[in-house]
Length: 173
Image (cartoon, rainbow, N blue to C red; front, side, top):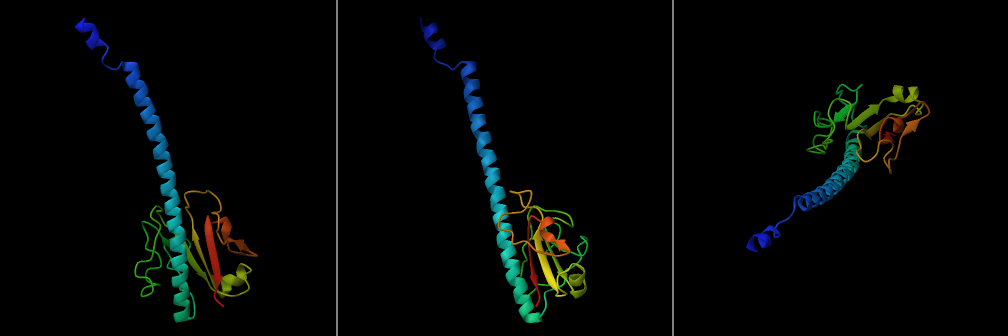
């Protein structure tokens, strides 16, 4: 009789497999949610970075009378900020010690982008002949089109919102 009692004390293979599959399913749900919240947090940081950069650009303009020119990082004259490129570092030295840059983007046309358009380009794009800058983000993780709350920026000859998930622009005068 002792042999029969000991035989009924363990779990069957089926019971173990059911428990393991339930735990695996719950773990996969948690990981998907964690990744989604991490992406939302990175997008929120990008928005915070954009606000900081806009404030620094205004401080630069108040000191120098104009917005800084972009350093050509290989993206058609745009200054790029991501894992590979430091963003507006020399232009904003003394205003921002460490300019923010996107933590995910790589390459010359990904992440944070900045360009100052002079009067000639402003006329070309139908922006009234007034110099301006465009500041944008190309790789928001929670949307694939326009990020909610993007101020957008465009002139009669070009709409930069079509090129970025989040973008803003400011006229110099």
